[in-house]
Image: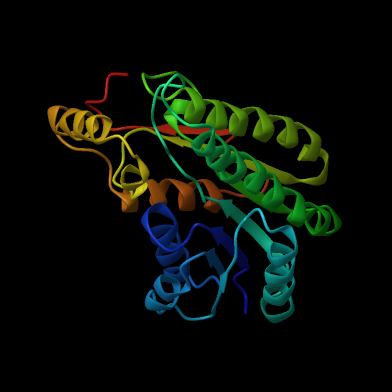
Length: 240
């Protein structure tokens, strides 16, 4: 087929599922990766391979990409979307939560980037889109460890973009502000969840997953010779 292969991690819900829908509507074959394959199959998208992997399991990650490339051709874009948000002050938050976030948000992202780079360099084209957060550019209360992971995403992305530019490979960082996702469900502090929901209401609502996904598709759809290095989006009424 004419359209090129897109890989999306964390594709079972939220941003990932909507990104998958929009790329599929444009005719792209997809490799969708998440732990919950039932949700991946429920998307019912054509020309799509669904695999259950942990982004920290490098071997399974490699095998899934190899299988997809054998079926659909080289990966032209990977969207590193898998992420965990566990909010809390570091004096109260356990190190288990820190480790979960750094393993998925940073180490899993490094896996995704490194696995596709050899092929992209050989083909002299490719796009890596890393989903970060506005909390990767500025800090918020209860966000210390989470912000640390997302600041890392920005630093990693910009370094690899610099390294890969001579090979015509784009590295794009998307940093959304407040948006509707399942990330809030992971937070173990009821007080923080209640405060966050009240804040969302106070600013008149937040962005939808569809709106965030449109930004991903837009950044990818520009000519290969144009790289949006960083795209920051947020609800208009979000001041911070």
